[in-house]
Structure formats: C-alpha cells, structure tokens
Length: 175
Image (tube, rainbow, N blue to C red; front, top):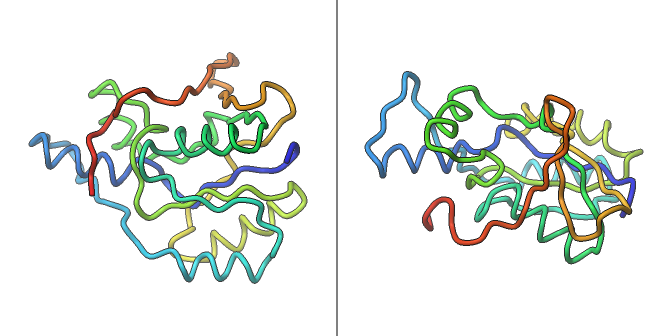
C-alpha cells in the first residue's frame, strides 16, 4: 500500500556474485561467499514483532529489482528506492562494476524483502538486526501512489532512474 516501507534482510548480490566468480573462474582480492541460509527463524522473529507484514518475498531469480517489479505490478503501486540505502558489500559492488552488472538484479539465496506499514518499519528493522541473518537489514525504499507498476531509484547524485523488469537473464539459472 502507498506509504509502506520496503526492507531487505541484508547485503544483496552475494550469492549471484559467488556463483558467477566460480563459474567464470574469476578471482577477486577477497572471497565472495554465497548467502544461502534458511530464513524460517528470522521470519518467525519478524512475525512476533508484527503480524502486519504485507509482503514477504525472496529475491532469488532476478534479484531485488525483479522481485520489486513483480510486487509493484501485481499491487498496482509504485516504489521508490534509495540507492544509498542499498546494502551491498564493497567486493560485490566492485565485481558487479567489473562485469557490467547491477547488484539489484543479482540473485540472492539467504535474503528476504518485506513490505510493511511505515509505522512498523523501525521496530521490524530492529528485530531483524538482532537476528544473525538480518544483522545488515535496511529500509531501502517505500511504496507510492505515483507511477503504478513501476520501480524507480533515487541515485546518489540526486537523480532518478527507472529500475525495469529485466528482459532475459543477467545471470544464468543457478539452481
């Protein structure tokens, strides 16, 4: 619903970049590890904090961008992300830059997206950060009335870019 906050449970792109580096035989200064993890205990803790979670979604295929585009389209709402709030490890950001990829489209295996009423967002964020699988959780944006079915991001330099639904695959099927 317009006004809702969009949260992600931690660093994005780890799994996809870990798989890509192994598949392509790429070596980076630091090792990028997959984020595969069972999220049931994190979700249970979140539900103890509030039963008012509008959407829970795993951003595996197509990453955060594809998941949010699907949610925006099905709910007929717009979404605005804050690029500066996106949790991305420096080594994942560097690998993506080197490979010409956007971390928003890279697969995740041990992360979730939650869409919740704004008044519940801070309490839920605190709960998520107390759990080992949510220690890097962040509020990354909000739902708006404007541009239904579309996701946009406020860039670090103050502009806005459209986060489209990707055509084809940025990363070949992992599983």
